[in-house]
Image (cartoon, rainbow, N blue to C red):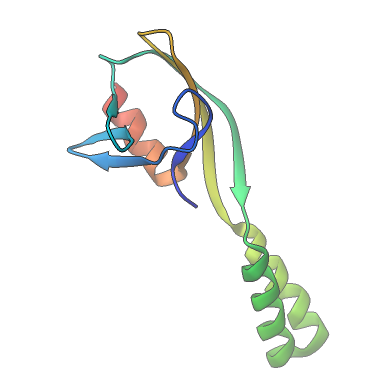
Length: 114
């Protein structure tokens, strides 16, 4: 799962951690996500991302090791997934964006925004 802008201005651009700030980076621009550029932000939702490949693979391996019950346990173990936060951002220049950050990066984002 990649941190990126999923809707609004800067849609589909990646978000990277650069010099202790998250940055939306394009070919010819970059927008630093900090209190100087953001007027407000809030969590829109939290979701888990689960790869279908991971679910099938874990189910297959569980089935080989423990049979049908192992297949169920293996597939279910993939449902833990990687948590991610969906965050609404309003920039001081009036632009808006909906971004996703994995849980670890969200904790860093909160720290850098305070």
